[in-house]
Image (cartoon, rainbow, N blue to C red; front, side, top):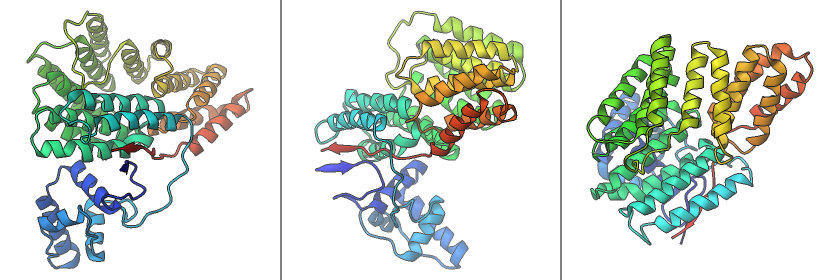
Length: 426
């Protein structure tokens, strides 16, 4: 039987609304009873009467029974979603690019098929790890805008049932996949959703005894706090992650990442000397030879990653020359398999050069970055494109700028979030 992981079409199994309701509930970490309680509260507030929903009612909706119109309105209010988003009315999806996303779809699909509980249990760590790595590899190539729904579908249908059975191996898998979904949501521009994923990932990881995974997720939450204007909280989260690492022996990569996150927060707080001290500590830590294999559930953190973080620190501190050098290093260290990461560094460098008045160089780098990221759906990349456009616009009369602005305008118009079709065999 075929299973369509993308959520814009129904299949032979559960109706679309059932799958969407399950996913929304799981993302918020609600039980059936909690959904029922919240719906009854909403009905009293909005309608002046108790709607009478029970945990059993919610269970039936998620297993094929279509809610009545009254309940559909309440569900939309509870989940802050439209009828289309919850699957009650299906709209036509955007057309999707055909080359790179389809290659990524094939890669992820094959890994999901191999790890499906129909052929092997989710408790087989290697199977879930392979899916996680396939998602991460595809995410680096095409961005979170394509892959989020597929990741949530896999987490909901394949991993959540094992959590309900209290399968020990499911907890680190669920934590890592939930953290990854948080990054995808963040990359697609949904930071509130990303925060909920990260918070749940922290709770799941705390049950595993994997200090590297738990600290790694703290670093991710620190990043989100940083980019949403909460540097004090970001600093505390990075320091908490470092404290977690003290519990057990750990590898250098996660320690270096937490140093870098602390440096980012210190840069936002204009503490230049402390920021530079943390970056130096991160560099020295990353140079250490690991004494053990890292947790397989973490994303890698290497010298290119550190250069990217350092460039943001220096830009925040208005040390533009240093920021540019770090961007150049990150670009030189990143291969073709890291499309989005290279784009970040290229577009940051172009922004820095434009700020410094090096307009021709900024335009050349921008055009190159746009050409190499045509299949990328990333809100974070779009933000850098918009920032660069605003910086180049006053220089429109200069040679070559009009062409660069045209390329930027076209890229900004076409970078809309889309969803990746992934079909897998069961």
